[in-house]
Image (cartoon, rainbow, N blue to C red):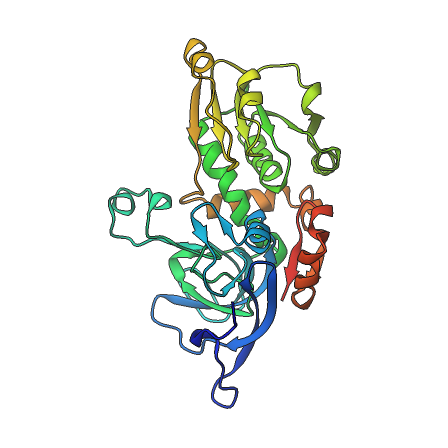
Length: 338
């Protein structure tokens, strides 16, 4: 795929420019100069992007050029876990405020949007989901209704609001509270952030995984964490964050309990007999809605314990080699500094 798409052509004499991480094709990431947006419509906020977390989806698009039916067909800017500084005023936002950005912009017109379930909108424009550009660029202009004040946090911490929102949405649907026991399978960044949300509800939380390195990160964040084969108990609710352990979740949920499928894997169907005979309820979790303010408040509460999630930083110019060499696999989360 040649880098010749008109939207990226720059007349340097006419426009201010900015740097961006553009995935031109599979395994072909370039740091390019593109136009810096100079027009801010009413109802929008201009943001100086400072921190973007590398998500598993960024890695998938880089390595495979697709995730399911979402296929990279033209150059696309990566990134959607975003913390930055407001460059203009907005609703509850003042210039200079640290902000977190909700990366999905729904159509606002479909039956799902009109019923408040905008995460299910089939026409949502979600950062770094083809063909929509992401946030690994120095500036973005974004609807003010999806920009949240994260004053008091660093931009790195603010970037955690997006992955934590998945956990907020799942835990909110679960109705867990004090006295409930929770198992979280898959102790990557989403699993650990979901654990913080579950703990904030008053539940007792255990994490599991097959990777000892992830167990170490979970332990550093203050959680009880075990390899899968060490788990013996059954739990009131299981949050499956790996995408590969739904049968394991069935083995460890109590009769009458709930399983929340967060990780997006390609497993075969679940054991229907086991589900029905034990009256287990299985919930699918897709992204989130109305979660960012809660996510930000939980990050503020647990920011000291969350430090292992923001300890690895790289510069934007380092990103192509970092992905090519697989360095990201050594860390639970990597923050790209812009």
